[in-house]
Length: 90
Image: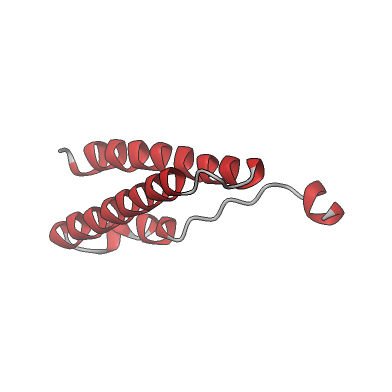
């Protein structure tokens, strides 16, 4: 734990590999891939909402980790929506 607490925070998002290669595929495929990412983020958010609501007796640590993940899902959802508008012109 000591070692991990002192490390730089590493946030690697698998879907960024897809985003980085968007210019290599057709517009139809781009739109489909972005839709899939958006749906996946929405699924994650909904799953976290259910977990938060259905686990009232969870520890303070567990509750806060769930809330952290939920907050991140909201930010990522906003980000992908903004990216789609800017990149695809929606």
